[in-house]
Length: 267
Image (cartoon, rainbow, N blue to C red; front, side, top):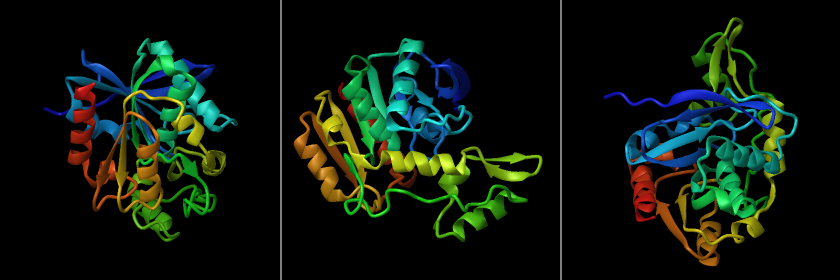
């Protein structure tokens, strides 16, 4: 049987936000993608967790089919997520986030604890700055706006030093004048810059059950930081994935889904 996430839109805080919903009677789980990402990044996870769990994946402002906004601060992402959960009447629920989405997830728990039952943080660090993180900002301002084919768009992105553009091409669409990205290049740089900082207070502010997922080959979350995050925060379980990088849900989808399922089932 083919599994698909149903894409819908909802007006939240005066702006249109898109989201994908697995549907069904399962326990809802909010999923938050990282920078440059889309809700459909969680399609494989949603299929693996169904029918016991219902993945509801939000496309955050300025990403995918959600509306752009000049405010791309971490606080704005958190406020959107809180309003979204309330609008759908989903809380309190487990919240899963990847990278930037992971930071949004644990900050959502810190500022709106009544909405978050548990945390699953994939590669979202409590400290996002140099020298702890070698490259906290990927400058995409010179990336192509249009290319005649999807293959040419990939070639041009990879020519700028990206080893595999597959993750970014999930946000590529064909328009009348060629292939381009749904996200605004300058917005993404500003959003990444706004995420640079010390998020330890928010990470340590809650004690709900948490699963921290880390790829040992990650270039974003240092292993030492992941282990310190687990050590310092009560109720946190760390799962490390050998041979996986920052996008461990793509590097080991079965292992990723199994770890998430085990954690959610134990709740």
